Amino acid sequence: MAVRSMSKPIYLGGLPSWEIVGLPDTSVKESKERIKAAIKNTGLKLESRRIVINLSPANTKKEGSMYDLPMAIGILIANGVITQNNIEKTVIIGELSLDGRVNKVNGAFPIALEAKKLGVEEIILPKENAKEAAIVQNIRVIGVENLSETIKYLNKEITIQEEKIQIEDMFNKRQQYDMDFKNVKGQKSVKRALEVAAAGRT
Image (cartoon, rainbow, N blue to C red; front, side, top):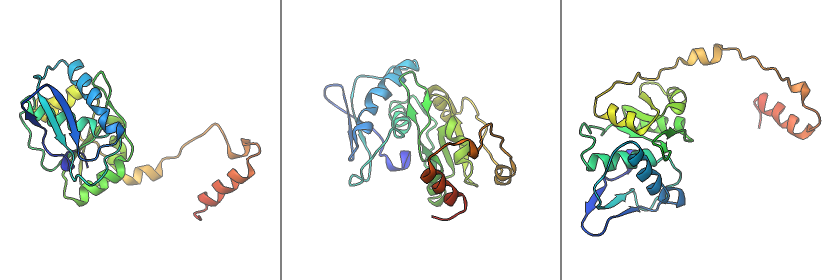
């Protein structure tokens, strides 16, 4: 799970190259180009070295783009860009755009829930996922908008307000919709399935 399941990137001698090992799928392998572009467009320049990122455990397949941000942070820590790197009890997830923005990912709530079970104290994730993750109580949720903001936060150059949400408020809010269920024409089987689901049956 993000930083906690990722070994620190190491630099090896030889021609400049990036390698991601630990059973990554295609989307994880493609993250190399997203990370390179995001770091460059954030105004940072890394030395030309051979970089190996080990996603452990090696026998578990890694899927999705949520590894972008933690891998970028690991590289920047190894490169000395991030110096305040006491993140042993922090989970980081997020997809990077080429311009350095941190995009929304899937599964923020279950990740935050599992992180809490593992004793994690803080989770750094896309701003758009912050409210979802904040449903999990007693874990500090920090929403970030881009790579630059994440770097400054980890280096303690800026502070970011912790995302908080009251569970009671979620259920007390009334939502108004312009459309009504009766406006749906046809689709009898679909409407029947929705009615059964709304009634709490499977």
